[in-house]
Image (cartoon, rainbow, N blue to C red; front, side, top):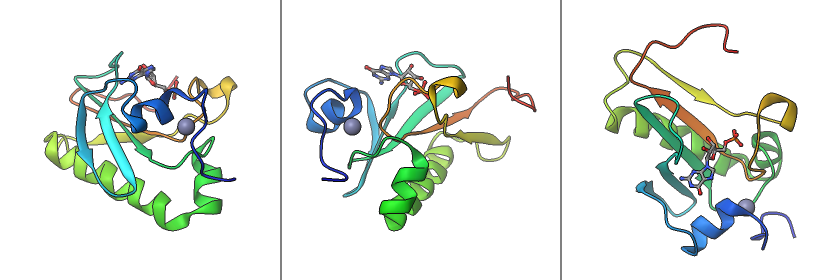
Length: 119
Ligand code: 5GP
Ligand code: ZN
């Protein structure tokens, strides 16, 4: 069923507590934790607790939860004090765009200059 935990999904295992993560925020529908391989001084992942393969699939199935993820991304930026200098919310979508974990997640990146366009 859509949104159900997937046995082979890394982020579902983090939601279940089977794999440890440095959690910075949690709501009923979302979890935010530090990326294990940070690409900026502040690099936090915000995920829906429900499993969807990417952001578009999440938004199509559960738009309110997609909004929760975006709201939490903004809260992470505030908590990390990167709001004033600017930060980036990134949803890599598809292997060709660098997606490696197929459980929807927002990268919240800040704390350094961020080039545009990204690579
Ligand atoms: P993607 O490449 O799919 O957009 O992002 C996946 C992210 O998950 C990567 O930035 C990667 O560093 C991060 N990641 C992979 N495995 C783990 C893990 O076990 N724990 C945490 N906290 N992050 C992970
Ligand atoms: Zn999952």
